[in-house]
Amino acid sequence: MQVHRLKSLAAGLTFAALAALVVHQLAYLVVYPSFVDRADALGEHGHVSVQWALATPLAVLAATVFILRQVRNLGVAAPVRTLPISATAAALFVAQELTEGAIKGTSVVEGLQNPALILGVCIAPLVVSAMFRTLRSVGEFVVDLVLQLVVRPVLRSRLFTSSTEQTILAVLLVSPAAPRGPPMRFVHF
Image (tube, rainbow, N blue to C red; front, side, top):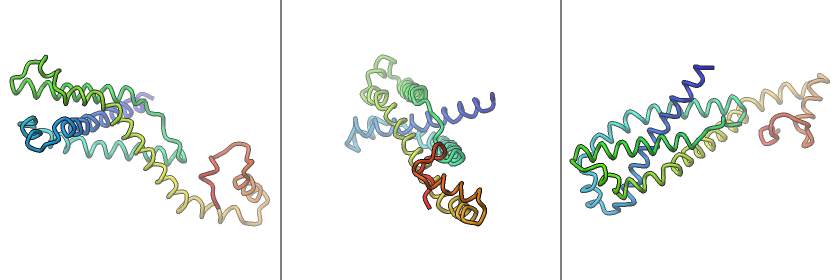
C-alpha cells in the first residue's frame, strides 16, 4: 500500500510541476499580450525551457499510468484529488516567481504584487482541472478503442457458440435491463 501512495504522490507532483509551467506561460501571455512587453517582463527566463524538458517526459509517463489504470478498470478513472495538486502547482509557481524576482533584485512584496503571479495563482485550479478532464477523455477514448478492437471480438467469438452458459452471459450483457455489471456503453455488439 505504501508503494501505491508513493506512486500517487510522485504522479501528483509531476502533474503539479507541469501545471505550474502551463500556468506560468498562460499568466504571462494574458498579462503581457504584446511580445515586446512580455519579453521585457520575462527577462532572463531561459531556465523555463529546462523545466519543460524535465517535467514533460515525467508528466507523459504519469499520464500514461493514469490512462492505463483507466483501461484496466474498463473506463472508470481513478479518483484524483485536484485540490492538493492545484495548491502544489500554485505554490511551485509562486516559488518560481519569487526566486526569479530575488535573482533580479526584486523584493518579496514587489514580487507578490506582480499581476502575472496573482493571475497564475487564480488560474492554477482551472489548469489542473483541464489537465485531468483531458486525461479522462483520452482515457475514455483509449478504453473504447481497446474494447472495440480487442474485447468485443473476443466476446463475440466466445458468446455466440452453442454453450448455454455463454448464451445466458450474452443475453445479460446485451440486455438493457442487466442487473449489475459493466456500463452498457462499453458493451456494444
